[in-house]
Image 1: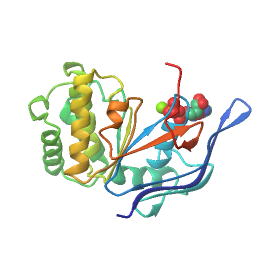
Image 2: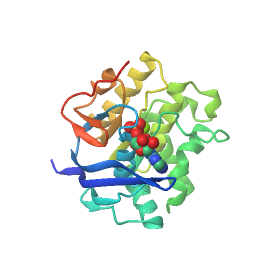
Image 3: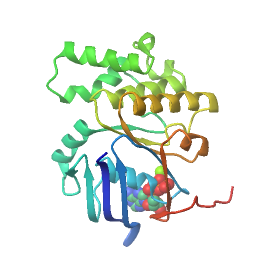
Image 4: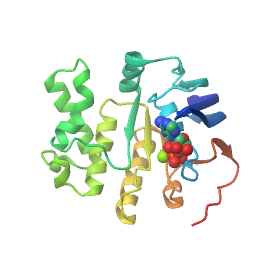
Length: 231
Ligand code: ADP
Ligand code: MG
């Protein structure tokens, strides 16, 4: 299978006050199409920064980022936003749903920027809500949903533009074990049955066990071994 994600000698620096801090150091990694990768590592090791590079939320200071064969490191502004809207779905730890909107409307949001008609949008929204098993909660607002249901809505929103790549930042970090496992089974289904390539940050070895591959990050570099942390 070909590379879905390729980072080549990526360096990322942030400005903290007047100081430049290098967070990723010459990082190279590949994710093949069809992989479900767990990205693990201590807090502050750069995991979210890696996801931001892969998902086109931010660009590297130097180095190359390619997704589905396309270089994205040189894209900026509107072109990067358009690329992102068409190619990546994001899932976050705290769901990031709009509190005033129903599940149905939250999932519809990414489609408002497309040329789809209202009828087409509604159809696509209903399809993804049924994939995540939430057809019967369509009219509910986030406050009327459990954490697991809210995360399913967020996953439906990530899926609604039919991206090949899902990027998940600690998607089960706020859920109890049973609910976490349900969400992980759903991600595994999306990987196995729907062919989604997934990159998931997690602290949880049990969550990583659902993935096909695990990468360990330590201080902005890949590590061969799990990094020991004081627990
Ligand atoms: P992780 O997700 O592994 O906990 P992050 O990628 O969020 O780590 O952060 C890695 C390092 O980069 C941390 O030291 C963090 O403080 C720093 N950092 C992240 N984002 C920014 C930013 N926008 N500005 C300055 N420093 C940042
Ligand atoms: Mg993080």
